[in-house]
Image 1 (cartoon, helix red, strand yellow):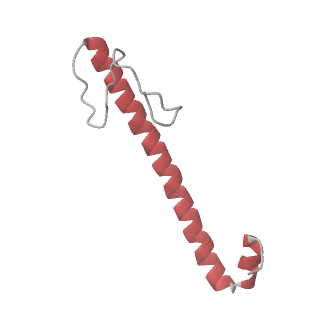
Image 2 (cartoon, one colour; image 1 turned 90 degrees about the horizontal axis):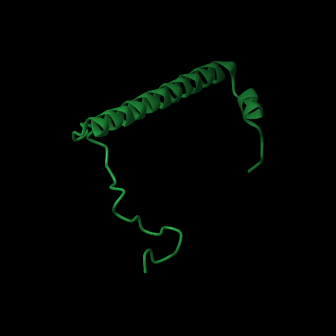
Length: 84
């Protein structure tokens, strides 16, 4: 197997195959970018929901949110074996 570049591989294909491949790649790239933006917006909204709920003294509505109590010590994840 030779180590060629993507451009070299595309140059070997006929143009009528290359154009649809490039268009599909651009569509996939655009969908991934949109998905990333949606994930950031949803995560931000959930964090704001939790912050507002905690400030108001009520249980948060975010179904995917886990609240960790500051009174419960976190396990030591830096050592193998945890809290021993």
